Image (cartoon, rainbow, N blue to C red; front, top):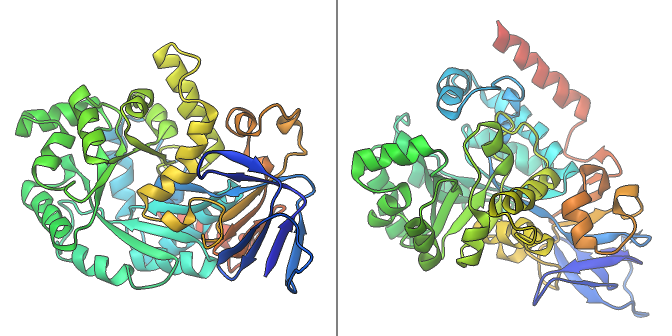
Length: 422
């Protein structure tokens, strides 16, 4: 068992609050949350927080982890050219070994940013899951079914395979996007949702051109089309959700769908600003993602949280829009809900031990008027002192514990990039 003591604990249920409880971790779960006790068991390790903050880890609710291989390679292009000129041609050259290496690189960036799980849509899933399992990192895979897939039925095989592979891995149904997926394949995905009573996710209403194209093809916006097909019958949602009509927002609220915002990526690709405050006020469930490092280019949740709130204040002309506590809820609880990780969303007995320690003894965390506000408006990766996933410490005080040395990961990644340039 591991004991965290002498610090502050950020909890979300039944509301956001700070306590001075101890937290004990037994295996992969939280065993005790409460005041110090004299009847303590023998601990494997006792971690003195020294006044620092213990909180649930951030959940990256939309990612393409191994896209770290294209960081700063595919810049200064709009989405359509970014995909067709840089992303798809280079992805065609990826190998299992490359995806494994660049997934490890992404995991290192995640854990140093306080991210304890990702919702990933990419390629070479066997290599991706091998990297996650070896590192001890939690991941949910989303199917990216599209017109380029040679074997449509692989989606169902993946659903069955990865949902029983390992306790750190799970799988959600989905398509890449309406504009990359023909009607027959969208109907196939909706059929799997019906067969397994499962939620479905997709890139959704990311650009104005995407929405206009869908209306031209089908007479409906992407959310309305997919809902008509039964895609959302058992829940799910969309990544980005930038260009949402009032009817789209009402649909998401009525169906209980998740809107996952990726502000850094949307800004860099000039796709627009998602109407997060309107979605929030309509009662839509919200989460945050980084998207991939090819479009962001960082996998930094502190930057994403700041952008979520700051952009809404700007576009709404309202400084009270998206307050810090709500953004923290999106980042920790919302992401867990979107990913189906309901036992990873808070610090409570029986919950998974997916935890982070935030160093409050740094200049940007002082003075302490409000810890939630400091985290969202002033926080940075430098404040992440420790990241634990499933009871295992993957990052602590600048050191990584992901199954291999960082230098080997960097060397293998750069060797692949040299081959790519040839």
